[in-house]
Image (cartoon, rainbow over all chains, first blue to last red):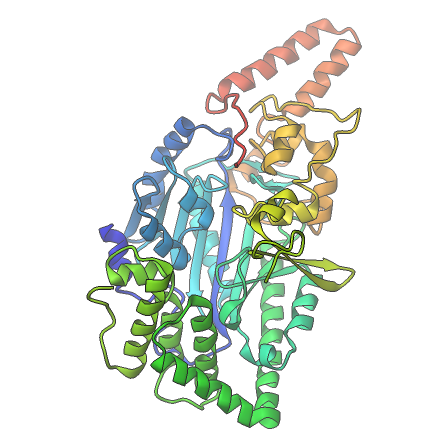
Length: 358
Length: 177
């Protein structure tokens, strides 16, 4: 679809070109909302879902917080287009599985997106590079307030915003920060951190959310509980914890240089070698190698590339994006070939990014 | 890596669990994972299994299977999908939800944002849009007390609410295959 093709011209909402390389990659806040008196999407029928989508669509498109809105209906989107939207964090895998009556309205710069008829009637999210949870909460609070002038939410004074899954009831809010933590992983200190974070009611997930592995040393830290605390309290605690983790990461990096400088340089150098010379690269290996490159940049060992360039590659080497660049649907093995070619071209400035015959 | 249950197929489902503060990792093939009740295509279901939400235990002899007056979801439907049918389900299944909510969250009272339309209504009118559970309870009480006039009024009130919400109709449960 043309609209989806256009997305590839930009690096994605959580990337800031030229920003200093940091531990905090991006922040996100989402709210789950349902309309009063309408069955939740999983229980409603196609007719009701369709009616709700048609009613909501113009309202969402007119939101002041959603300038230059782009609207996509799940029905009729190709597999590759859906993959791209998932990889860019614009939709969830759940929404991609839905058909008629489910859709997405997002701000053209991809910083705000509203899914309709996912697990809840409305799932809205805002995204930005780096750490900016408080700002994001203010933004999404504003969008939510604009919306609630025009619709009536399912709400209980005792349980708050009522959601299809009881795990989201209350604020309906999930705030998360994506962190790049190679130092803690290489120093074998990540597990106690994850355990500690879990203990205080926060969740740790991989790059693409629930059920995904922490490939490329990317970890998503988010609140687990939604009932019994104010949004501001949840956001401040999360912020405080990720700042602490950032400190731990900095210390781990310092120790890495002090105690294991040679193996660190070897680790980064090998990643450079593989990424600039390999002909076949699978997704997992690539993410791990890119992480090593990013680490080299963060520590000033590598100067020829920027962290944001590496972050962009994190996105471009995903199956959906690769297939879009190639211009056709290709299997896993051909993707490995295309992935290696794309990375080589980007990192060395030589060669072509796109295969002529796959 | 091979599946640790059957030892025959490749393990593609990797399950991490916290057991007494220790991280326990398990690796299953897709069919053994399915046999254990882990829905591979629905990662959300993983957490449900951990919380016992999706667990299909033998129904206790006296387990109630009430249906939501608004959307007709039954507690057995909820146990299959781990998702509620509509807002009134929070009332209907309050008994079943209470322990779940306590285990999941930090409190049992919402203290966060309140929508403006709710604030306008005032706090006296607590809770769900049409608090059907409350009405039903009153109805039962009225019948028990043989106050038939009041009971008739309550019955009409319930009927009105259900009719007022045409978007919510009875529906067969949709269970993921």
